[in-house]
Length: 348
Image 1 (cartoon, helix red, strand yellow):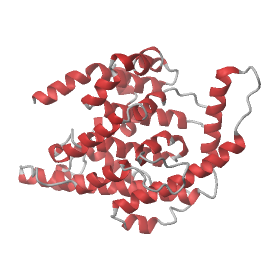
Image 2 (cartoon, helix red, strand yellow):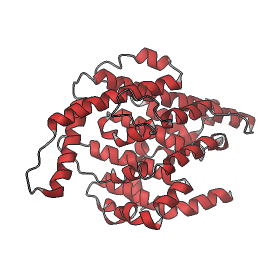
Image 3 (spheres, rainbow, N blue to C red):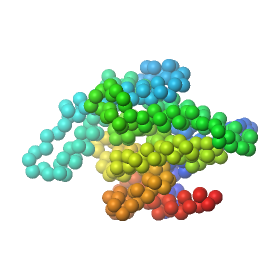
Image 4 (cartoon, rainbow, N blue to C red):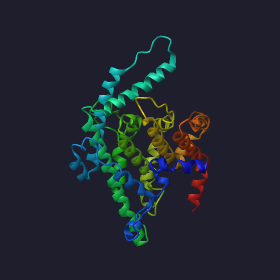
């Protein structure tokens, strides 16, 4: 297991950020050394995206200066609705017509092909290019605000040697509330469902997003789950982490199910390597979810084990794609050792 995980390390530096802390090369800057190394990956994700090939988002300056999380998340939701609208139009035009007698297999293949065609149409020189770039820029800005808050908190704890439990992480709290609150008045009717937050919708339609936006969604999801588990100031963020874990657990049939099913990776000529990218991102989000006892127990319960756990042992770890199989193997490792890890952490 260790050999497989080590040989796939370059991919997991991107997709399993909370397991590999950032190494600082500047030993002269003590403040940088005191940063919360458990979340250095969030900074890497921000600085690694870079401008788009079209010259950058049309509202880049305004977005990068915005610190109002409610405005940023509303912008993400609005841009996302535009993407869904275009996806619906493209899907209707490109939907294959199965011939009689093709059976369920033809229907599944047709759905995979239609999804790949839709994602390709959205990302390829369409009028929605500016929308996708603005969506990506807003998600990057949210990550920036999360990292800045965590960095300041970690440095303050490291320098003072004490934790202020009366302090509330305003940024993380607002990100959680805005991504999970139900839409009161969906602007696009069919796409936004009353009682459903933005995060489950982003995960459901992850293939429609550009690569950097997918990484941003995964990073925000992971951070909200593990911010209260890792780092010298973890206790200050425990309320956010627990609240988001409860949110995911309450919607496990939707969220966790999708994260597991994303491991059924069948790359097509149209989708390219995006299928593998999505599988690795969903694997990372699933492992973050399993670090919480309520989600772990739900997934490994007798009623769900055969549907959600056995496929990892019977199918996913044997995937011909090395990245997918090694990622599945690490998820199996988390399943087998999760209870012991939590017991050790609680004891400490």
